[in-house]
Image (tube, rainbow, N blue to C red; front, side, top):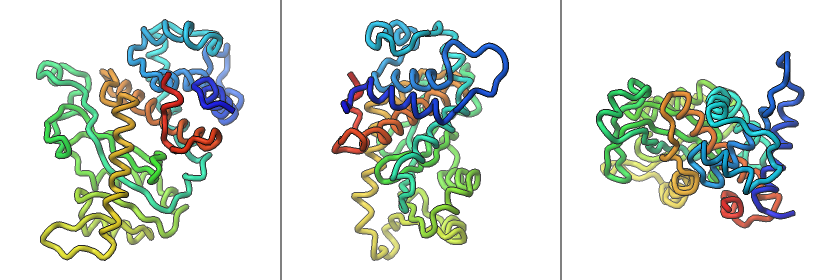
Length: 297
């Protein structure tokens, strides 16, 4: 078995098509099925084509025969935005089909998702009221947009995620994400969550402890370090590596979304692409679980 983009897309299409089963909608089936739509969306970000119009011109020449029907740019955009709930479910379905899904340790962090730079954009954007100004201490810069809160395994497999206003406290978002899907914690007794100093909170510690979860994070300088804090640094670097994959290889901050649905769908599109690569790589003998090198050309 090869590790090129065609092999991944074929395997992903079969996986999603089997998972979706027979469509329940009545009437004439769409020319581009839901499984084909999600596979097309994954291919777009893996090959690094940000423009949807350019992508639809790119496919026939570089992936001949892979997609018998391609919609126009407007139709593709509308289908992708409307498919946000489907994208979320597909990320979970593909992730749950890996051995990493039952990992007893998670890493949690948030990263900026810039949505505009000029003041007129911030005032006129349809994202105004959801997006806002925030500060990124890792890069010592202000940005206007959202923050992606990602819960993943140490290998980078997405478990849960949320987009939120950058002014919202990270601890509140983590609590809300886990409350929204309580089965995630119920299925993993003795779970360990690894985070940074932004998640320091006695209230959060108690809330997680009541659910059998332990939160491991660095202590402030004026407090006595925990005995196991020396284990944190290499694990904390893993989440930075995951964010680098999303931004450096999957162009997370160049998503091009201009509406709430558009930004959310494009972020989900990139998370599904990363999940698909992690799901597919073990079957092809890739030495790195999250490697995308075999699929970007």
